[in-house]
Amino acid sequence: MTGFFETRDAFIARFGGVFEHSPWIAEAAWDAGLPTNAGTADGLHAALVTQFRAASREKRLGVLLAHPDLAGRLAVGGELTADSTAEQASAGLDKCTPQEYARFQELNDAYKARFGFPFILAVRGLTRAAILANFEARVGNDTETEFTTATAQVERIALLRLKEMLP
Image 1: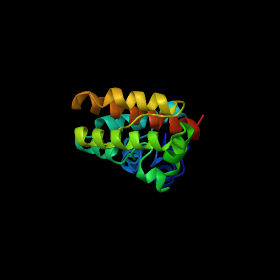
Image 2 (image 1 turned 180 degrees about the vertical axis):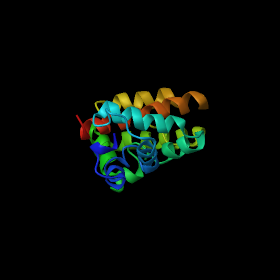
Image 3 (image 1 turned 90 degrees about the vertical axis):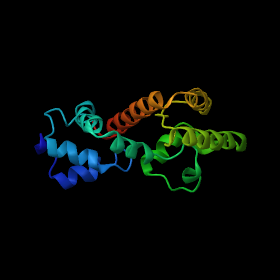
């Protein structure tokens, strides 16, 4: 259903950032042919997720690596994408106490050292305490469990972003 969107370039410009810094997913969805329900958040999400899941593990890892740390240095420096900034602010991560910030840094460093990619969680609607509890629980997972969990969280983030953009 490419007719819902004017051009490939316009589609990619609008939806290329739904998966953090990974426009190739929107490009692949367009090239595969969008379904008739691509004008809805759920329909477009299904088309994008199909491409994400069909990608090699290396490409999916690239999407994970494109995500910023939660309450990390990029956030403090104002260097996040607009979507990431809004999502982290919605959970109050922009208002961490010095102790919370230090704990996030410790967990971010430990997590990346263990798994090789940043901790990813769809934080919209969660409190800082809930995020920290989730972080602390997941840092003990095995690599395969965490890769699966992180990719599922990326998909959830994409759906939440699409729901902000489409009916």
